[in-house]
Amino acid sequence: DGGITQSPKYLFRKEGQNVTLSCEQNLNHDAMYWYRQDPGQGLRLIYYSQIVNDFQKGDIAEGYSVSREKKESFPLTVTSAQKNPTAFYLCASSPQGAGNQPQHFGDGTRLSIL
Amino acid sequence: SQKIEQNSEALNIQEGKTATLTCNYTNYSPAYLQWYRQDPGRGPVFLLLIRENEKEKRKERLKVTFDTTLKQSLFHITASQPADSATYLCALWDYGQNFVFGPGTRLSVLP
Image 1 (cartoon, rainbow over the protein chains, first blue to last red):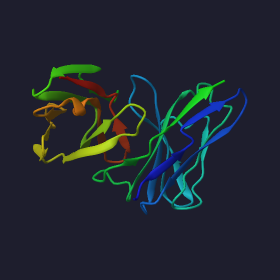
Image 2: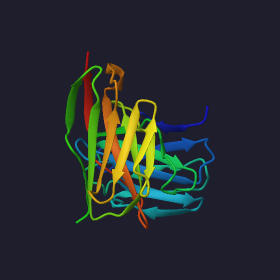
Image 3: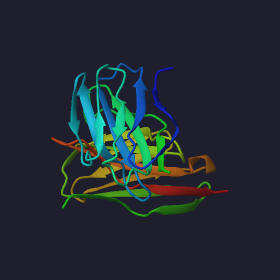
Image 4: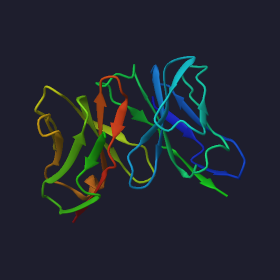
């Protein structure tokens, strides 16, 4: 079955530590996204990529970094510069990132601070 | 400023009734509007898409309307069931921008 796999499901970060969230898709999609979800707020876009080796900042990119070395993979690093990292992180993909294409989501990673 | 709102944080209805959820937006000109369902601890799942030049779209017990004059989309679930209980998100796509998601409405269908 095709889909998006996010790991780990739960992650804990110590102060001053960088952590990396994994996102892998086998849907052969070109576009991939990272969102942050906080209670009572809509999904907010962190970074997106429409093609391998290229990515763009979203609305809340500060304190985060990404890479897109392979079509299937779009890992997100939450750096120590992100002062409020506790949230539910969602990865998504779509065929070419067009508005008439649905986004396919993984089941998220919940990040907490120790 | 640009804003997307969903009518209420939570909605309770009786099984068998029609649930109506509202999505309003300000200072966007969306070409497409999508609705997603999200269960606790899971990622959103796509339900329906409607284009700016479409008034209504149906899929089984689901119906979406899109009024660009009112800047509003309505999402209806007819003959609702307890299994329909979830959070429903609207998302709009405007030219030159990425998807923007509303905060969601948590629907509870009571038996």
